[in-house]
Image 1: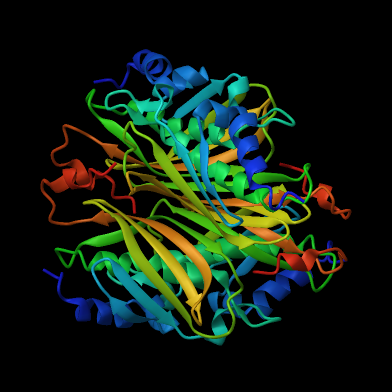
Image 2: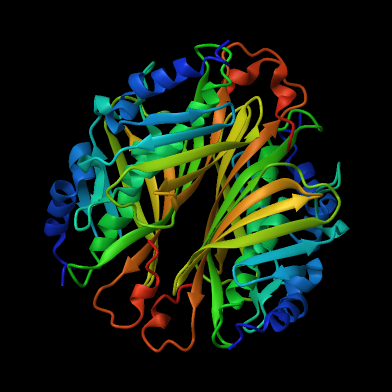
Length: 151
Length: 151
Length: 151
Length: 151
């Protein structure tokens, strides 16, 4: 149903999710298995005040969002959900006070499990890598989908 | 030098780090190998607007801060730094629109490598677990590199 | 069906799984959400020949088995399967040339997703910690279980 | 000292490390930041006897070795060591009863911290991905601790 409605997904994620709106997150490119997200630098997001670097948690936050955004391109109902099972981030360089770009790609896609690989860049320089495992909760599958409800 | 100055660390982390100030992060308890941090619910931090749940990235952000806070209790210079090498979060339950409490504990401490184990709670219910590996960058180090010899 | 048949599970895992038999893996204690496994030292498993320490991969191997063993206590058919989605190990100390003990505990249990937390010990000393996320593949649930078949 | 001595490293890792010898591990290609390792199928390594698939722990074991092998190309003393700090594996497909190929690449290299990214293949099909963080323990280090300044 929503599968071709990439513009709706983009608007929803940018405008309706409070955390994304606060971050100023922009979906630069969205395909069924790939997303590119940019976030401008913002003073509230600094983690090391001595050199004005981003708090590493913000990069984790944007990486976490990757699964939700790409996952939504596979929704078959407006009530479908994506819940993160686990998230891992490797920080390779400190993030300077300028925009970050995060790219995410689906590397495993099943009926219930989604795995995404993410890379974060500043000026085309790799600053972090990540992985996220997500639980795809489809509302229109009758069976016992509610059983795994502890997330 | 700073080792007994827990109140200074608390004030610095709560007031001087922009991201912590924005989150309203409070250090409830701080010891040399343990920290308990609380963060009140705030609408800007919502990730799922349908049920008002926290964005999972915020929990990752607070977990990431654990290493910095505890690490600072071991600083020997005001210029020492803690940089996150990697961070991993397991989300066990969705985070309801109320305060979260994150506890962190050092499980490995060397001259250069610090590993922390974190747990996040809401009303004493475990909602997430994490691990962080940190790089301890000491500015006045000469020779004690062999101290991290536990591996 | 198998739920109370802990002895059968124990024998199957120790005797029928080639890797477990090679390792000499013993299930010391098995409950529905907890398992304790021991593995004797064996020269073929050494990773550092200068000090005769275990290869870290063996500890990862035993940790990976935790999900399979505990998961089996929840099987409802002999054809049910547990497939590892991801595994993470933190090595805290080098493993000396003597037996290791690995304990695993389920921290999330759903219809499809299982998450386990593991600890490895030598002489009651913690040497490693781990986490495993597993996919529970039940054969007697009609619906679209086969869709997530990429594992 | 050892930096150009790739053949010596290859022989040492294949013949002298008991676990590698047992696995029949072969270093197919070794450069300063890249390694390709093959392991033939062997019955003792099966984890699921119903379909003869490899135990996932073996893939973790080979991935863990990646850091040791590449790290050794940067040794400056025969007594230098590489110790794994943490290892993470994402299993994307079950491993069929045939040879596996694991490729590893250094993505962060400092004086003390080494991070590697690994991919496992069977017949050019990606079956697993991994990350390893390693502690580089140099025996003859004096002063170059600042080299790992990329964070």
